[in-house]
Image (cartoon, rainbow, N blue to C red):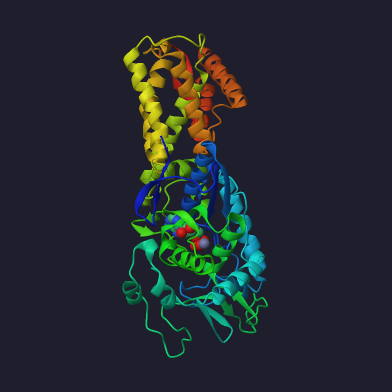
Length: 496
Ligand code: AMP
Ligand code: ZN
């Protein structure tokens, strides 16, 4: 059973074959740190965190590089507008690096709250100016770029005479040209699709560096080409990012690497689909972005309540990364319930004690069905990381786990080896691959101890007909989200 990855470039699921056996090099375009990351950005980074975790879980030694864009990202995709960092720095009268520091720290904090693992290397554009200048020089020397008054442009027309330019999104040059405006009289580019590798800085521009072409700053696309080559080599395995990056940023990255190194940088191009709000892409520029903090506090006019980081992560896992995901209160509420139900079953499963490791199944049919569902976890994950289907597989097993707990199905209906496998697979997927954590503290011994004590005090109060105390315990627990349930057998259970 091998891993298949949907490759944007071939528009097909392809068997994954790493450049170097047992190793994976993965580059993901990181955030542009001039403002807070919104939930849409988080969806992309959570998706790649799961891909990173799964590849590691499969036994690959993964080098995961995710950059920080802290220079060179202009407001428009095609070299128009101001530099995003300089603009905000000027407005707030601070150093551009203060903007970069503030939002980089904020980004790391959010990634931690979502339990995303840090990448192996997190290079910054400003830390790799020399590499970007070198690559630009190489592209000029190979004849694919030209200088106009201190700015260096990539010559798309020349490139596209020799090899296709828009292959990533399957667009012909004529169609791409149609989508861009005519060059104005002031425009110094030779062709409408040409893009800047290096941009001449006006004296007042806040971030600028010396180069063979005078003072300037790098274009946005060259940053990722130079840094991915430095840390992963000229040809690596996976290049990822949000779908919105494919048409321009990644298309230009491919052109730059081809022009410089005569090879496309990555074998597999992976793109996550967009998080939408009422069908419209969540984006910083449209102003419809939810900040993670707004979600965690419930402090947003469109939110009915707060949702925790793990509920949000679970919500994202319930949809395949290549499908759009629409953000709504109903969907989040359903995820909150689903996540709790799954975690409760997981806690029950963990507590099943296996007395005889070799015990055979008493219900052979049920045992076989159970094994088939467990095997589907890996099959679905190997099918282009289908987290949504793996969760559905887990939910197929939840009623069985609960029935064993309630004594409706005897535990020995299943072979001991099946129960052990189920415990191992739930742990591997829920905690290691999906990166979900025990937000309910269900496995925390201290909370269980406190709950036992409260349940005892309530029982005593009831027996003395002190209903004021017993009601107070129940109501105050309900208010903080812990529910008590009086069972038929006289016992009391609790859930969060
Ligand atoms: P940026 O900080 O704008 O450069 O974006 C960082 C990453 O988030 C990129 O990979 C984008 O493609 C991705 N992204 C931006 N908006 C969304 C969205 N609404 N849904 C999913 N990913 C997004
Ligand atoms: Zn990039």
